[in-house]
Image (cartoon, rainbow, N blue to C red; front, side):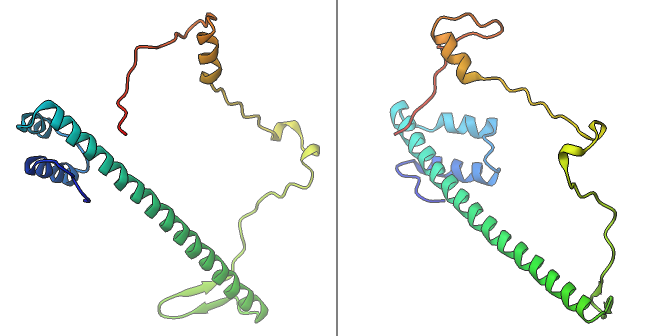
Amino acid sequence: MAHLYELSTELATINDEIISADGELTPDLESRLDSVALDFRAKSQGIAKWTLDIAGVESMIETEIARLQRKKRVAENLRTRLMAYIKGCMEQADVPKIESPTVTLRIQKNPPSVEILAEDQLPAKFIRIKQITEIDKTGMLAALKNGEDVPGARLVTEKTHLRIR
């Protein structure tokens, strides 16, 4: 883990235990976190800095996930191209099967499938209509802010959140 800034040794130990518990803040760890002998302001500032540190780790993980996804796509594309290459060579040489002690290659027919030639000519019994219902919360919020009555919804103004800068 990167810096834990000005957190006490006990907070650093609790942090390590939370990490080893896959990020779960158990009642025991929460109790220990509450009992750390720091005044409220110092503890709050330390924990806020800790959350910023965790946000940095999240960002690094997201970057690594994106890198690995790109690497996976490259590997998938290479595998697809290599399989097409082998299949083409086998078809050109008229060799339907190759066996070895570790791998067997065989060209086989695909199961039957459908190719759509003209979608507008298909019979209605083969067309399914998917309907998605979605609530327009943005529009509803604007209407409620303008004083409109929206049955089944209300404007909530009491919620709060913590912002760390």
